Length: 132
Image (cartoon, rainbow, N blue to C red; front, top):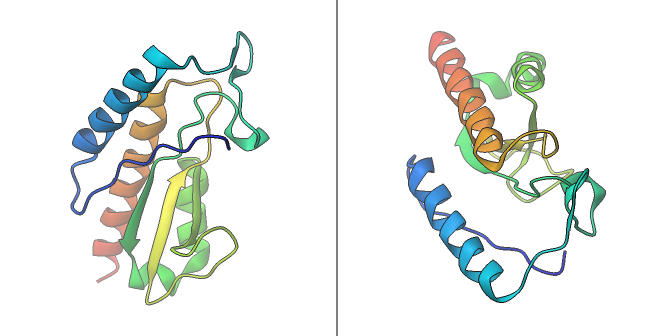
């Protein structure tokens, strides 16, 4: 990637994080237009980021689901989520803490990508609590 814009904060206010990101992107795009293709969306070096290019992620502790990786992956697939360790791709979770993000970036808006991720996170939290 030539440019990576990150908006993050502690807590669960995804709306605030998203609004801050959109504001930053809009400010940058006023000065430097991003490469865009009518069919592929925003163009980027990594083909998995074509489309919206947005990767929304949450670091979340799921100790019970960590013990049932099959269930975790099942829910993740249902919501098109990627599950990985907090140190990046191809890393394991430490202490049951995962980095969970949206997989889909094409065929939906940035808002839809974040909403899909949030819906999946809420489902994972619900299942984690039910496993108590």
